[in-house]
Amino acid sequence: MEAKDRIIVALDVDGLDKAKSLVESLAPHVGCFKLGLELLTAVGAPQAVEFVHTLGGQIFYDGKFNDIPNTIAGAAKAVAAMEVKMFNIMASAGIEAMMAAVANKGKSLVLAVTVLTSFEENNAHLTFGVPSKAKVLQLARDAKLAGCDAVISSPQELELLGKQKELKGLLKITPGVRPEWAAANDQKRIMTPGEAIKAGADYLVIGRPITKPPKEIGTPVDAAKKIAEEIASAL
Ligand code: C5P
Image (cartoon, rainbow, N blue to C red; front, side, top):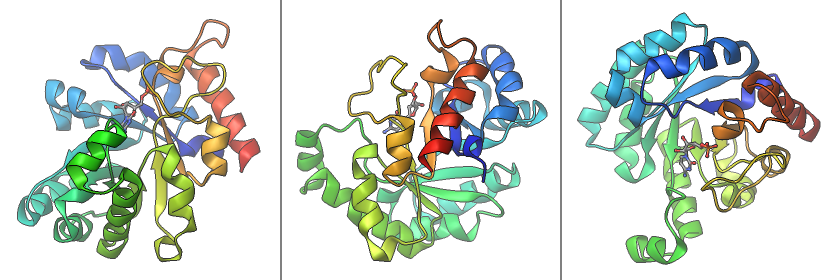
């Protein structure tokens, strides 16, 4: 895998017209595009997926499935038929639901979302009854048991996950990544691309630093290339 293939660009837009030039120009320079609930709901999943595929991009289908195993099986089958590179499920849906996703994944990778990083520690503790790191570890173990290909966590949990022998082989994907030259925006506990890769991330989800780069960096393609260079030198 080349360094650029580790970059997942978050396409946080509400319409395809806004994404066209981004996908067209970035497709040769990044691994894939993350289509989130906003775009999938506004435009319709098959349309959004076809649009990106036609422009030469690969897809991370960020549908965050969370349902009973039978429903997850059907949803996984439907999304795998669209030939997306990866799609995700909430690990909290349970081991059986994750197994249903894995059994129907076709050629796609199944990613398990552990704890949403929007949870502040106090709320995570209240909701889960344990500190968020403990919950992330438990859910990652469930994901591995169920046969998922990867987990999504905050950069802060990468090292902890990497230390667990039983999680060997489970890929790690993280958002909350900011190059030194980019604004933090609303992201709080961030790491640079180099730090995240060194901490064990296999793929990085990056939105605004690429889609809206600072003027001095140049175009989205310039930003993606710069990040790929940083990843390459951290590997
Ligand atoms: O623009 P930015 O790089 O902050 O975009 C990060 C992307 O990753 C957004 O699509 C955001 O919804 C997503 N994400 C995140 N933190 C999470 C889960 C998803 O930033 N815990």
